[in-house]
Image (cartoon, rainbow, N blue to C red; front, side, top):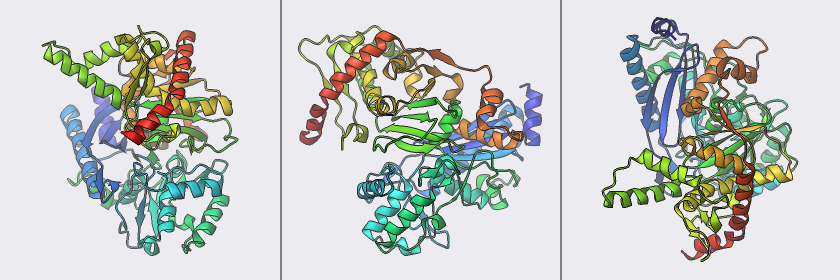
Length: 532
């Protein structure tokens, strides 16, 4: 947009603000009428291990919210000479799941238990069997039920449960609500009505009552809303909290708060059936939008929803690029010893591009990138491990290809359930995250690994904060009867379909051969966990 038109949008509130609380960074993005970012701000934070619990302090969340918003408004003033008084619509997103219980006086009863904790195995297993629906350990329902099984002292005072996104939305609007995609990480959703599954709620309540917990779960959970529904307005207190300077006026409407999985789907235009996306960075996960629910229950597959309530199969793996990054650091050290001058981005590009020159099956090499346990692979813990036979072809291209294959291998284990047992068909997967920074390489290898076309968009790099800003924009701009799918396809992405790479038959066969070795050698990785 032209500079004067941008100033007019800013001054008259024809903008949308998205804020996402990621695992290492809080990011705010302000977009204009053409949906491109006008300004952004960021704040780095880290989870803490306190008394054996991985947590974030809520005061840090508020401080980070204020800091990244202040950075954003400073950028607006410096770039356009405008003091931000009005915002057209706002959306909040955060890492999904976890446990935030509050009492009637709105006091947090226990420190925030994040998705990273693995303390709810007993509850997860029992609920999965009871509901005939996979309840992962990180889900809010699993955390509450585990507290019930342990008889934790805070339970009699629990009056409300929410997620991090729900909490931030609540303190800005006063509304205890969640978007349906985020709510699907608290308790199973009935996609037919876009609300918690009534039968499963009754089953949960009966099981909880048998352990002495009498409060109906629905009374504790946030209200569920779908994309496009009004989720409240910025209160005077919320405006002062977001912008302590007092410049921001209250009244901006909010879209329903969503999780990072939902905003990733929006940011990659992957909300329609037969589409999906793969987020690949520190961890890796895929989201496949289904035409119908799965026929079976699989512990490797999480069932969540899109921001409009459509069923989504999610395969989540704990480690993606950490082991590859460690090797790159090692090679960087070698180059420094030799007084070679190669920047970190250039080293990554060279290493990735070497992988394309390797044997299609990696020459007999195999690598396990496991820094943590991988439930999809049946691993309780992780040990990074590189294996080869004496006759294997150890070359730099084969080594590079092996490390890149290892970032995708556990994801393939889960996706094979969808492809082979459920016969799911996908028209495309959209790749986003650090694995795709080097042009073509990660995209081409993932297409072969998933035997599915892979699209990469330039806009996907804007991330979840942009995705939730788009959901806020949809709330503000949608026409009667206009679906989120059509809004994104026609008004946001339009001609920007991204670059698409079709799976190459030789890459498909090579990855299949690699996976045969990977599966056969899994007992070696299991032994490493036990003995090292």
